[in-house]
Image (tube, rainbow, N blue to C red; front, side, top):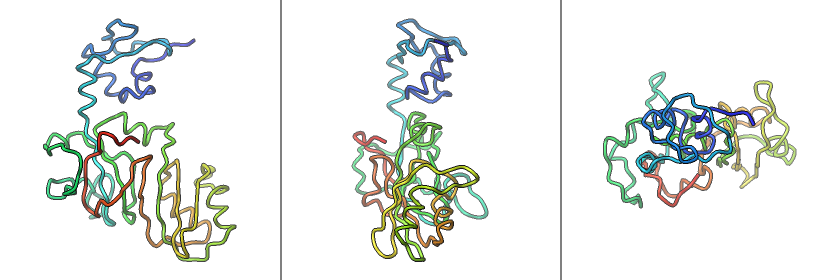
Amino acid sequence: MEKIRLSKLMAHRGLCSRREADAFIEQGLVYVDGERVSTLGTKVDPQQEIRLADRGASRQEQKITILLNKPVGFVSGQPEKNYPAALSLLVPANRFPRDRNPLRFRPAHLQGLAPAGRLDIDSEGLLVFTQDGRVARRLIGPDSAVEKEYLVRTAGTVTASILGRLAHGLSLDGKPLKPARVARLNEAQLQFVLTEGRKRQIRRMCELAGLKVLTLKRVRIGEVRLENLPSGLWRYLRPEEKF
């Protein structure tokens, strides 16, 4: 069996991101079959046992993940075209008063925090920020299959045929979309469950099907739900919550 880079294998197993793996290797915090490895670029057998030293594992567990109910008018990444970044909302005054995570806010919680996924300027709902490369990989890695659920209000007549096209059979940018689950909740609202995140995917899907999106809100990522988090407020991911 062909050997692969240790950092790549660590990321594939969900131990950390590749960048974090390189840092752990350099610091001598990685053991392969019980032997310390501290040389970058080391290749190993995919079946070998990999373990992080307690100090490295503890550091991983201290990584912060934050959930924000992004309002319309904020961009997920860097500020652009006079639109503010959603990251600017992550201040103590905007923490959900009923956040059940006992963590006390510290400025260090914002260091290295990055969005794990996107929501368009015109969309609202659940947006994840994390310091944890494992979380980022699960949500936006090339092999991610985590479900994202959206509530979408549309203008236009929704027929059984249109629902079928939305669920399966559409292509964007010359590439077929993965099958989706699409259901009509009432006359004006649809529920989308996707496992991919192409740019403005739902809006473009609806346009292809002859519908216009009026509002779009993400309410779930994996098993984590928006619940009663008010617009513009944030909370910490709870220890029992997993994507």
